[in-house]
Image (tube, rainbow, N blue to C red):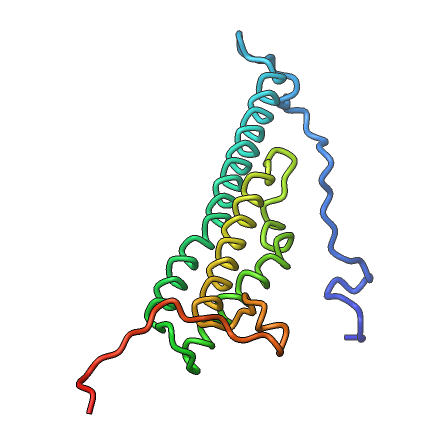
Length: 179
């Protein structure tokens, strides 16, 4: 047997003829039943596809709102962590505070990327984006408040000008027995 030749020997390749040469009646020759039109089947398909698109749009809108509300959970968790860290300046409280500042800033920089999977002509993303931005700004405000409670924000004139005396303490607390 020569190389490249089939079993048939004459060099013919397998071929399948799909043309219909039969004399039997085909489905095109049979009349449609009463009350049935082929256009209604096409309309049903378009209705089903429209319903699927509407369901997908509703799903995207729902997921966009869920993503927009996600910073609220982070806000509660970060507030609890800052409360647990206390009001003294030490490594843990500073780390938690800068984490509370960094997370909202990085989230605000990527708002477009966060909502990219939910873009659709039928889905309105303005509301979820505004909620996402507002919650992240709330997280940023929480971090700035913590910086202020730690005394790390320059809020008095003596923080800026070295010739001014520092601010007077409003309260003084002491305890124990003087010796």
